[in-house]
Amino acid sequence: MNSVFSYQQANKSLSSSEKTGQLFMPAAFINDTEEEILKLEKAIQEHCIGGLCFFHSRASAATNFEGKKEVIFNADSFETLKHSSNVIKVLPNTPF
Image (cartoon, rainbow, N blue to C red; front, side, top):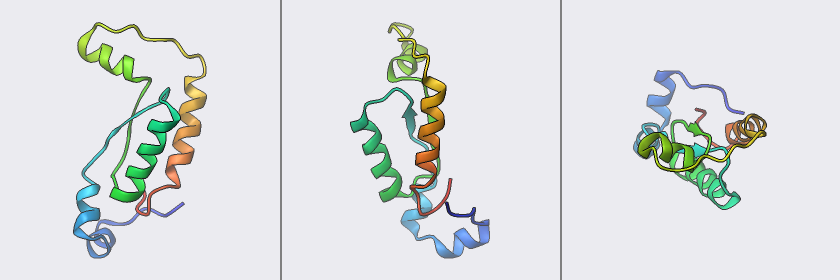
């Protein structure tokens, strides 16, 4: 895993595209499909995103917003979150 850059290091070493990527923090869904997780991993690697915001599921995020969808209970959510965060930490060239 990469060490955290100081502001001065990041300012000198990151390209304009990488600096822009650091402004983005997409949603990561714990109970997402493998296909969606792979898309997220690709985005992390290609666009130098600055962080992630974890949600339980797309349905729970929509429920919080719309108040209409059923949220499916998953007893393994915490273990899935721990695994996902450990995998995602090693993906970016620039650490979160």
